[in-house]
Length: 118
Image (cartoon, rainbow, N blue to C red; front, side, top):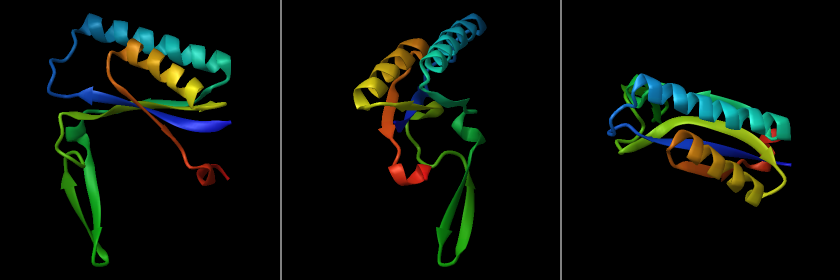
């Protein structure tokens, strides 16, 4: 089986959902996660704090610099992710579609390199 990252692309410039909207979204995504577990595809899931909570560590000339904020200033940031295992890309894309519908955000489906799982 191959492993895939399903990355939630969150638009931080859009209005934040209401508390009820967040609860409904969490219920939908939890439902998809439970479906993944039942199918044997689930490996890991995680939500992330907004990008302003991040710190970027950059190497250069044998030293590092640290800056607050996201790696790149973009409209969409990584908001959360699932790591799944599937037989093929088509199966991963089907999970990506369910995740996009559940969380209401674009999902980037990206395979892991096989060497990472030795």
